[in-house]
Length: 311
Image (tube, rainbow, N blue to C red; front, top):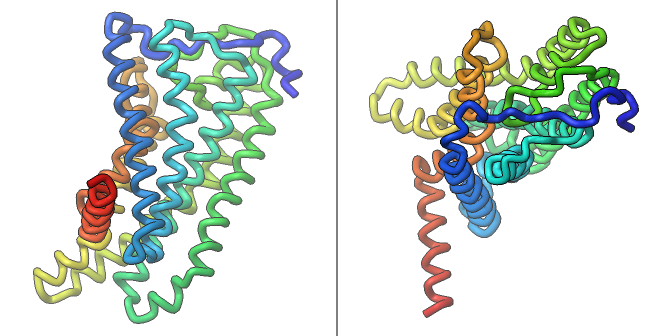
């Protein structure tokens, strides 16, 4: 399967090598983040499944997002933690491309899920009387399945291009995971063609959900501004503020990493990568929990039930 990687069979992920004196500190920070990410998203899923008040389209999508965040974090952080702890920065070519595949698949799916959630908020704010009719359980399931399938199609095309690359050196990737652009730079055949095709395919599959998200919030903002009372505007905005914060963090970091012209300071790109690979999976459930009264109530009920069992 990996016959095209004949010259190089493994890569070295340089990670945060320039911060070698902080390796243990970084390990502890990422370990705490990973544990909290797993716990926060698992709790979010349990709350959504067990509390009937959370059986609504918004929380159905949030539950799917939490499942995605668990896989997303597990694609990157365990390998990073092992490297920080042991100092072993080697990763096989097949392992690197496998990590890249799942990373691309999951990040693309997150783009679609966030756009679906923004469309849900658009219907709730702009078409409240038709919301229950349009956003029924069948439509919700179809939107989620479409999000995962579209991402699978995109990633399969992307993987097909990556497998045609011959790597002939150097074999060092100046990153803490196998990202597409640093990996393509190591190609010794058709590097510009592969890079341009990768960018075009990524644009075709990820730009539409981004546009849908922007369009949804444009209509939401216009609708909110038309509400006469300040209290009404604040109450309406509160229904979508959590999702807006999550979207801003996610796309803001993506823009910094992939669209802003590269500088010589690689550390800036690594920091931005942390913002959308490490922080969103833990930030998303916390943001929705801290800013949402329904989730807080469900959490109180769950804690009360746990205490009753153990008393």
